[in-house]
Each structure stands twice: as structure tokens, then as C-alpha cells.
Amino acid sequence: MRHSSFSYISLCVLLSFYLANVAFPSVAQAYSVDEALAAEENKSVEGSAEPENILNNKEPLPINARILSLLSLVQQNDQKNAVQVTGVLLQLEEINSTFNAAEQYLIFLIHALIEHHAQQDKQAIAWLEKTLNLRDEIPEKQLYLPEFSEVNLIFARSFSALGDFKQAFDYKKKYIRNGYQYFDGTRADKIKDLNKTYATDEKIKQNELLANQNKIKRLKIIAAENKKFAQQRNILILVVTVIVFFVLLLRQIKVRKKLKYLAKVDSLTNLYNRRTLFENGAEAVAVAVNEKQSLSVILLDIDHFKNINDTYGHDIGDEVIKIIAELGSETMRSRDLFARLGGEEFAGILPGVGCAEAKAIAERLREKVASKDWSEFNINEQLSVCIGVACLEQVESNFDDLLNAADIAMYYAKASGRNRVCQFNDECQNNND
Image (cartoon, rainbow, N blue to C red; front, side, top):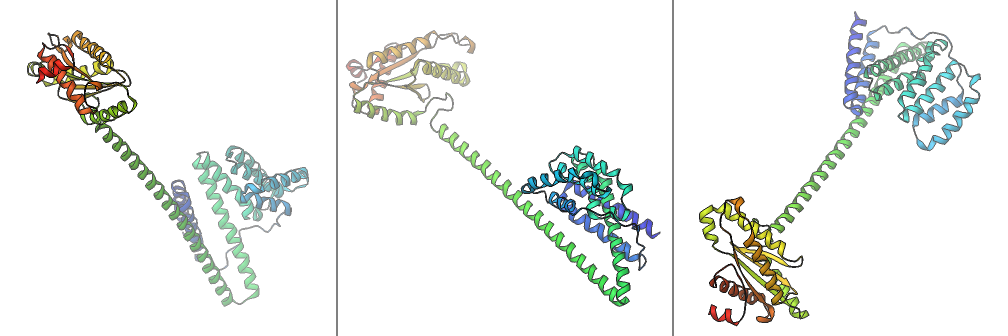
């Protein structure tokens, strides 16, 4: 009954270890192995005071010290030892024919460890399978030793890496079972020796001391694993925080760029707005005066735009404004600035352009608008614009006066019958007065 209870508990512990090891290997391994050891200790305490040594009495086969030293180097998995490991392994392969079954067993394990560390788990399994044929030639007691039992552990890790978790679980269970058997056998031998040397009370004290030492070791392992887990968690939190910070920073930069752009342009036409026009206009006048260059300004107003809004609606009116903005941008040169002043008024700054050339550019824009087909908006009549042109040499050297001169010329064009281009001159000024 006691054996059945222990088997059930051991199976539950092993299953819990397997699931935890897949989900969170670093922490699960520490807790699950400790629980398995604790369960085994309880089972041993509940058993007879002097458990039967399950290891047979056949003497273990001798092991070449160089093989054990090489196995220790390979278990360290240190790249600095790679050259030394290769050299020693080649030397041992040359005398392989003299090795007994136990030595060949460990040589195969060394090959498997090297392949496993290189993440070549299929090759590792191939080497490990060679050890299975040697088990019958090795004393059972020797197979329970940690260096021999490690074959099951590497089997489990390799199958786990390949995704075969059932095989991994089976070999992990064998590895833990061998550990229990090795521990029981070793402990039984110690108890036997103590019975020969000390009195019963001394043996009890020694067992209590060993149990306390094991408990302290387990607690240290758990503390170390928990500390490692906490460090990994803190690093992860820090990385996530930094990523979130940079994402928010980039988003803020994009928003600021967008707001800065929107502050300079008209939302309907994507042309520069009134503020940008005056800022660039003042700068253009200063450059033209300093470098003694020509500078012209055109001012455009859509004829009878109020009637368009009243007749066809403001949505159609907005479409008309956008198309005239596109026609204006097409007509301007790449170095010119075309902006929307507001409503149906547009203005253009033409650096390095005299009065005659500016008037020709304005005329081309007027013709484009006059010849535009508006039938797609159900507008049957032709639309037109009035454009006023002014040059820097005709006014005072500031942008406000230059734009005002173009405005006078534009209103003179409207007074003269609309759908025309007028240049600022004395006649325009007198008529405006």
C-alpha cells in the first residue's frame, strides 16, 4: 500500500515538473526537483530503518582518469576548452580498442554532449543510442553513478529540443529514478558503515545532520533560482518600459511635426496659408532689395464666387477652390510660392520676375481657369478669375505695400469687366482713389 502511494505521488510530482519545465524552465526545474527529492526522502524515512541496497554487488569497471577529466571539461560547455577537448578526444580515439564497456559508454556520452551543446540534437541522440548496447556489459551499480546516469538527462534535453516531449518526459523520469536509486544505495552504504563504527544514537544524529544539510542546499538552490528569475523579470520590465518610452517619444515627434505643418498650410487646399505667405513675403522682399533683384506678386479672386456657393452649395464651392489651387500650383514655377489668403482669394510670390513676365504668368493662369470644364460638378457656366499684378519697383520696399498694390490692380480688373489680368500702375491707383 505504501509503495502504491509513493508511485502515485512520484508520478504526480514528475508530471508537474514536466509541465512546469516546458512553461518556465528556470524556476520550475528548481522547485520540481526539490519536491521530487523531498518525496523520495519521505518514502525512505517511512521505509525500514536499514533499506536494502538495490545496487548489485558486482564490482564497477575501472575508468581511465583522462576520460573522466575530458567528461568534466565537456560538461562545463566552455568554448575556451574546445581545442583542448578536441585534442584529448582524438588521443583517446586512438586507443579506443583498449577501452572496456564503461569507458566506451562515457566516450559516447562525451560525443553526445558535444553535439547537444552545438544544438545538433539528432546527432546527440544517435550517439546516446550507442550507449544502450553497452548497458548489459556494465554493472548495474555503476550505471546509477551520476556520470553514467547523465545519458538519460541528455536524452531528455535533446528530445525536448526536437519537440518530442513524451520521450523527453520518459527519459527525465528515468534520470530522476536513477538518482533516487543512486541516493538510496549511497545512503544505505553510509548507514551500513555507520552501524559498524558508531552507536545507534550517533547514527541518528548523523542522519539528522545530513538531512539538514540537504535542506539548506535545496533552500540555497531555490533562493538562487528565484533571484535569477527576479533579475530576468526586472530586465524584461525595463526593456518594455524603454520600448514604450521610445514609441511615445516618436509619436510625440510625429504629432509636433504634423501640427507644425498644419500651422503653415491651408487645410482645404494644402497650399501655404496667410501667415506663411506674409512670413515668406517679407523675407523675399528683403532678399530682392539686398541683391537688387526683381520681385512680383499676383493676387487672384474668383469671380462671382458667392453665386457659386448659393447656387451649387458650399461643398461644390470647396471643390472649385481646390481645383483653382491645383491650377495655380501647376502654373507657378518651382521657386514661386502660391498661397491661399482666405475665402476665394489666392496670392503668389514670384522671385526674380519682372512686371511683364509676372503678367504673362498671371494670364496663363487666367486662361487655364477660363478653359476649365466644370461639368463634372454640374456647373454649366464657365468660371473666371480676376488677377492683379504688382512689381517691387512700383512700390515701397515692403511686402504689405506690394500686396496692397496687387490688390488695387485686382479690383481694377473686376471693375473693368472681370475675367482679366491687370497690372498695378498709375491708372489703377487713380481709379481706385
